[in-house]
Image (cartoon, rainbow, N blue to C red; front, side):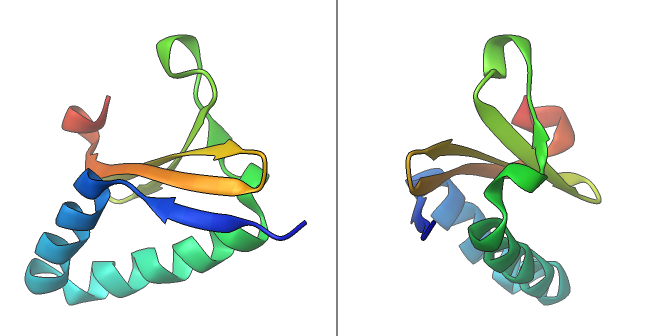
Length: 84
């Protein structure tokens, strides 16, 4: 199945900040986004209030996304203590 990816405004702002502050982590996240498109169900599903969402952790950062049909929507990228 071919997946399409959408970004929330909050995620776009976070990536712009991260690109300036930490280009290495920015590149790491870009590679993971490509991996998400190929295998979106591979990453950890969340439970309870966040049921239906999935996450990937990059050191202190957490990327949260959801899959609806063939659309992957990237919700947020934030530090672990603020993401949940």
